[in-house]
Amino acid sequence: MTRPLALLLALAWLLAAAAAQAGPWEDLMGEGKPQIWTDPKSRFYLDLPVGWEAKPNREFPVVDFWRRHPDYGHTARVSVEMRTLPPNVNTRHFALSVMKDIKARAPQFRLIQEVRTRVSGVPAIRTHFTYQERNNVAMVNDVTQVIFIVGERAFIVTLQSAFGTREIFLEDFKKMIKGFTGRAPGEESRPTPKQRKRVKAGEMVNPDAVGY
Image 1 (cartoon, rainbow, N blue to C red):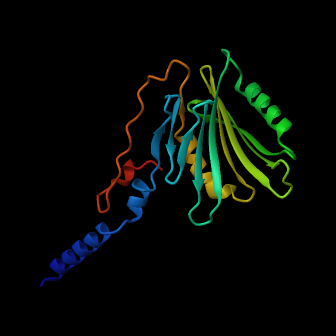
Image 2 (image 1 turned 120 degrees about the horizontal axis):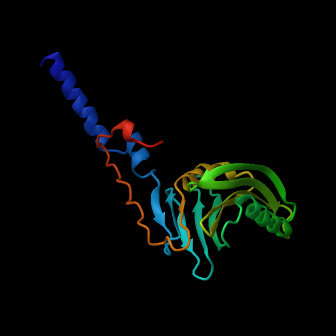
Image 3 (image 1 turned 90 degrees about the vertical axis):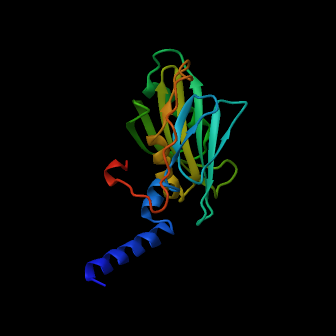
């Protein structure tokens, strides 16, 4: 057997072995890739990372997403609350109003950070704060909240977890926010993008086509 032929056979064997088990590319484009989740009433859609379970509320304009981390056992919730507003409400003013209401209900409220950003193509306010669980001095909750307005619909997207566990879920929350598209009242009939194709083990992938 010539050396070039032996090398080709060895390469073929390695490719076959890689196809038989999940590899980095499958983790990136397959099971680990967020999938588009659409609100049942078509008010928004987002990229939902693997492991999160959606629980829409039929009585209130709120959708909750829950996840229990398989390794650490910690649980986190991401809630999407929607409110109908009059025309031309300023995002900053609305965010201040929301924060004032939170402070009134949250014992030992402590604002850690507030930054301006953009979500769903519009200005947004992102805050990070903590508060003490009511009637439980030992329980402190860690919250990251993003507020923005699309047309006459406000979105309050909140990640909440026990103090010290925020970093475990923060990357997933960032993926949700990055892929979040909100719709104004009357825009619910707009088409939702199709689900991204999942790449099978061993399938060739063009790295330049992958969105990081």
